[in-house]
Image (cartoon, rainbow over all chains, first blue to last red; front, side, top):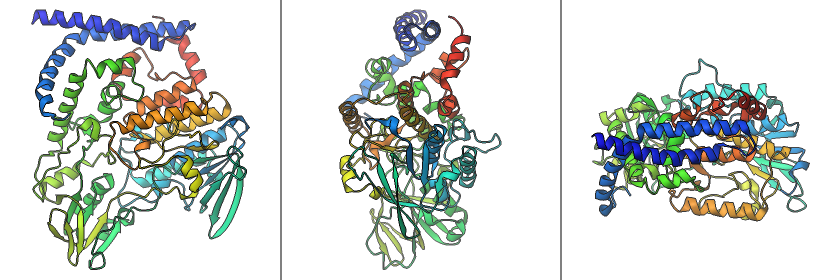
Length: 78
Length: 511
C-alpha cells in the first residue's frame, strides 16, 4: 500500500511536470508579463493536482488495462 | 470573401435564435441588417412547437450569454416562455424593427458572379420582391420547418389518423385514443408522455436505441458536470486537431478512457434501466459505445418520467419501425400488430435549402452529410454567404452567439480569413475526421455535440481572446472540472472582452 502510494506520487510528479510545462506554454503569451504569471499559476495548480491524485490515476489505469486487455479480443465495446 | 470590409448591408434569413443573435451583433456594428422571416412571429423552432414542448437543458444552458434569462425562470423552460424571452431580446437590442415578417426567401443569387453582392428574392403573400445586399447570412438551422413524413404502405387502408409531431398542439387530440408514436428523439418521448397522460393506450416504436442523457447523472448531478467540462472534452473521441494532452490521453491513457466510458454506460444502464424487456421482448441497450453513439442523430435528454412509465407499461415500447399500415393500425417490422387510432410521426424535419439554387448548392459540395463549412460558417466557393446555426452542439444558443460575434468581428476587420485554398483544406480535413468515426447522418457535417468546447476555443482564438474564461483564485481548477456555460462568454458576445481581459491582467495573482 505504502509503495503504491509512493509509486503513484512519483508517476504523478513526472506526468504533472510534463503537463505543467505544457499548460505553461499554452497559457503564456510572449512579451506579456501578466500572461506569464497566470501561466505559472495554472502550471502550479496542474502539478499540485497530479501530485495529489497521481496514485488514484495509477491505480485506475492498472485496473483499466486489465479490463481492456480482457475485453479487446472479444471486440467488446470497442 | 476577398474584401469583407466593404460589407454595409446584410440580409439575414430566419428570425430564430441564430438570426436574432446575428442581427444583434451586426446592428451593434452599424451594419444595415434586414431579417427575413417566413412566419408571422420571430423565434424559429419555438413558434412551431408541439404540445408541452420545451428546452431540454437546465436554465443556465439555454440563454444568450449577454442577455440572461430571468432568475425565476424554471429549468427545462417551456416553449412559450422561451418565445417571450426571444421577443424581449429582439426588442432590447433593436432587432425587432428590422424583421420583415411573412417574408419567405425564395432565391438568393449573385447577379454579376461570385463576390459581387447578392440579390435576395422573397415573397410576401404571393407577390415577389427583390433586394440587393452585400452579404447574406443564412440562419435557418439544420432543418427546415417542413415535416419529415416517412411513407409506409397501406396508408389509404388505415382508418385512423396520421400526424406529424408538429401537428400535436394539445394532448386533447389524443384523449381516449390508442396512440402509436414513431421515433426515439426528444419530441418522440415528449409525445409519448403527453399521450400516456390522456390516451387509452400508448405505444412507442423505436427503430434504433441510443444512449439517453439523464438531466441528472445518477439522479443527483446535473449532466453538465459530466459533459460540459474540459476534462470531459478531453476524453471524448479526439478532436480534428487534438492537443498534446489529448494525444497522450488517447494513447497511453486509452485503457483508462475506455474504462471510464464503460462506467458511464453502466451508470446509464442502471439509472434508466435500459435492460428492461419491453413490449416486443427487447431492451433499449444501444449497440454503439456511448462515446460514439453520443454523436448520433438523436441525442436527447428525456424527461425522467419517460423510462419510469416505460417500465410500468403505461408506455409500451417496441423495437423496429412501421412495416405497413393495416385497417386497424400498424404492423411492425418484427411482425407485431398494433391496433391504434392515431400514429404520431416524431421523425424530425426535412432539410430545405432550395432557395440557394442549384449552382450555389453545387458549389457548397453538398453530399450525404450535408455541406461542410469553414468554422461551420463559410465556404470559399461562396464568398459573401455565411451560415450561422449550422453547428449542432449541446448548448446551441451559446454556439450561435459566438458564431455571430466571430462573423461580426470578421466584418469589422478584427481578424482575417486564411486564403481560399487553406479554407478548402481545412474543410476537407474536417470532413475526413468526421467520416472516420462519427455515425452517419444527414447533418453530420454540422454535428459537434460535446466537441463544442473545442469549437468555441477555436472561435475565441481566432478572435484573439483567451479561451480560458474561468475567473478567480480557483480558475485553474474550474477550467478542468467546472462546466462551461453561456454566462462564461458574456463579455465575448457583447464585444467587451478586450477591455475586460486587460483589467483582469492587472488584478490576476502574480504567481
